[in-house]
Image (cartoon, rainbow, N blue to C red; front, side):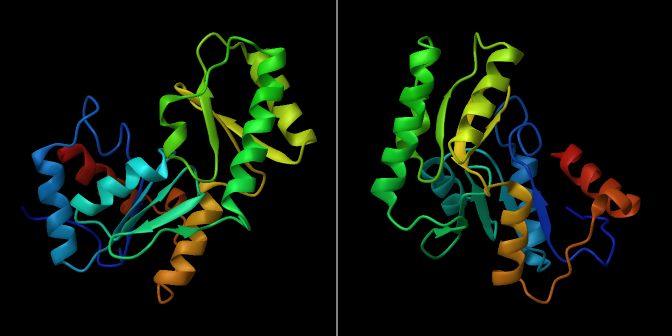
Amino acid sequence: MLLDLPNSIRLIATDMDGTLTRRGKFTPLLLQALEVLQSAGIPVVIVTGRSAGWVQGVVSYLPVAGAIAENGGVFLPGDTEPEFLVHVPDLADHRRSLADLFHDLQNTFPKIQEAPDNRFRLTDWTFDVRGLSAADLQTMGDRCQDAGWGFTYSTVQCHIKPAAQDKASALEQVLQRHFPPLVWTNWHHNNAQQDAIKNLLNRS
């Protein structure tokens, strides 16, 4: 496989679900493309909201430099221990605080249920988004903010998280710690690079 990428591309940071997957699966062409990028010396960093436990399994098998999990909470390099990207002085206390806030929300929204993957998480707390209205989600976000926590949601899950935890700042930390020679290019204003990455991923 030959990849027609601009010479200025030094690293690729990418979402996973719906970007690297097709119908929820990794494809043979994707694996081939990742191997070619690795051989070319272009590291790939996955950025996802999935749990640290789930992502640790992925990075152990895929030819990637690592992955940022839990919407910016943890970096999992391919060959070393996980690194927190948010301040967690005591993990047990952190999990208890998240649980307390979830149960507080549950008193107001009794139908919400802890997500199956929550037991594999370190920095955030997840529960099912089904059945929640936009007004419900706004109320939850306000409650979390008032309690000093952050809140985000997708089409699948809601996440209670540290207020400073987000994918963009996490990626910046990872670049500074592990890839200091690289300059973070804003691809939203670099159409040639953006189109090249889209073409690569669409082939997979």
